[in-house]
Image 1: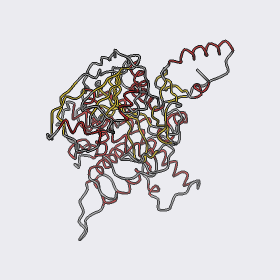
Image 2: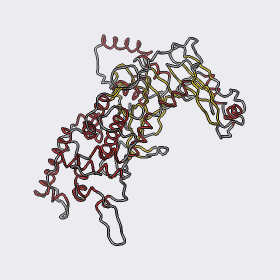
Image 3: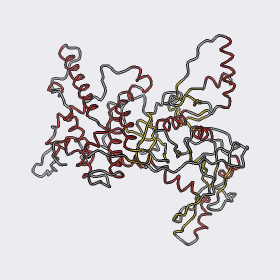
Image 4: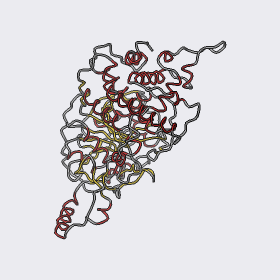
Length: 530
């Protein structure tokens, strides 16, 4: 192992046998460590693929609490809210003391001068009001407290019964879910200033999410965005995303249910899970022993910072065997081998520069030209030289490349397909297959059918998050965006899925709407219906 390789190596904080390198990948953006693998096509191949046997295991939902509110309080427990109350009251007392001694004067008309200590019940009422605003949307926050006037008829929002406008704004501004006076510096060094402030609540939600929901076999890893337009070193901009600017979160989910997540740290060289080992001067004998060990590690699998997140997320799940679905941002033979070493299957789409078999790369390169010769629904499967990863090319509208450790390539599923309307060169084979028929039953490879069904697990969760979205820009306090526009939404989404797919002791709501929210928050607001 040469010195250059040592310089570019780190260890996965969640898997001490995984190593991270940055010299064999390409960054998506100069200021962001999200990167794709860059490997030359290979000519070596195998001839007897050893498919992993991953038993199909459905998810299980354990016994749920007796009421919707109690289910929600599993994600926002009373003991945690009590700590928020202490943090908030102590912080406001500190600010008022600064005002009194002249250290930091407040405006004479500041709402904070009329502060009264908050309570656990009031925080739940504030959360209920926040949820009401996500269901009944108004252009401005003050519109919820406005009354009708002649020629200006307005709806009567019941939030006026629970909390005043000034009190709601005061809590929105000064509510703290962390202790701002004694924030742990060690946590800030690893999680970052913003993420460390929501770390306690985030860990609790992740723990509860797998207490009531035991994951099945198939899981998906993807990224999601949390909108934030203020100043922060942790935000990034991806113009192609529905939420272009904000915090990025790496997430593992199943059928829309969020299981685990890791905050993205764009400024860290080795990514959010990379830890640089500390080297010190050793005696000559120990140096020789380490050099021999490094020589033995030449065949160690190295991943880039983005791929290392996949291994970390899977390791955070309850111990079991999983089938991990990925998109081409992550896929490479090295990552799939590492997941296989950990006892997990993997399937994902692949790019031409991820180290895949060279003849398949050539087929992909000529797919959109007259030289493209593959007919629709043709499958080519080529194992890697060690027969541990299968490289599959399937001709659909375009040629699709897959990597997998589970599928052999000859498995088929029947499905109904519509004739595509595209007129591109690469789609001519499928146009010939359909002829004049607008719809046909087609036997397509199982890898494609199952991948399409399982890979969108995170996207399903994001769609449900969007339903609960407040649609208000957060420009001040990045932790507030993470708390109220991500963690609270996940608490809502996961609790909804639990009662929808589980066996609750109340009438389950099958769609996200006002009835479900009313059930959940009726007691929190003292019995006043939404």
